[in-house]
Length: 309
Image (cartoon, rainbow, N blue to C red; front, side, top):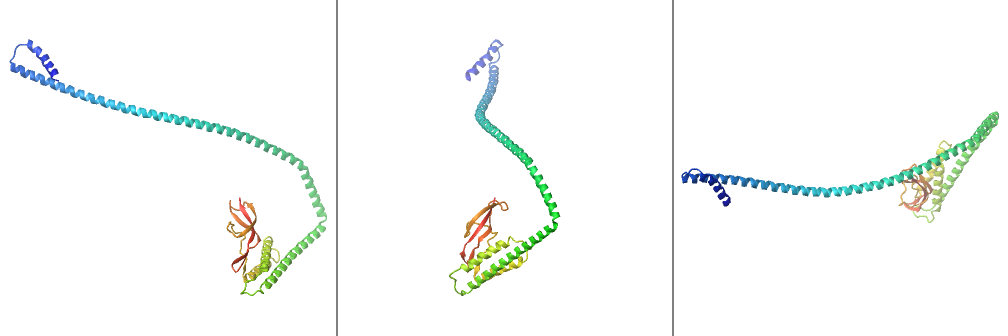
């Protein structure tokens, strides 16, 4: 720095040597002023240089940051590119598999359509074959009706005979049930001879009556309620059950109950049905009833179970 100041002083002093001579003190003062100006100029230049260096350093930092950002972006771009390439490859594989599946489905659909068309054609041919028989049957029925009308009196007699036979069958059924009920009463009366304060050694009579009651209830459930004597028959069965209960026996009501594996009974058979919810199991038929004596089971039930599809 001192060398630079000395050079500047000499440069400024050179013109002064050629000028006219002035007072040394004034010359010194003038030189000091010039030196001061030069120092201020140098300080200004140094400040500008420091500022420029700072700006250069800031630019360098920004460049480094940009390089780092670009490097990271380049790495991310490479990763994204690889990922996209993998996704494209996977999509290509899926599209290939889908195309194969579509072709297979198309082939199968074509086969099914052909089979259906063949079936339709076969049905048409069958329909044509049976059309003759249908017409012949219709003509035969018409002829039969005409003959029946011609023989109306005889037909009325036959109908009357059928009605009488049906009524006789109904009477026979009622008589059969009444005989069964009477027999059950006799069995219960014989069973009642056992003292009430002692437990019977043989439950066979009571179990036979319970089986007969269940059989009659099952048969009555299929009868038309308008049949003569139907209500009386139901009351007789209820009377039998009451009599059985009075001797300490009980037939639990299982028909229509939901079935579960924890029940103490035997499933003889099971049938699928669409009238129940999927997986629901209901006891739909009692083959042999459960019988309890004084709260203790002496015969387990045998049932059929309906299973919802």
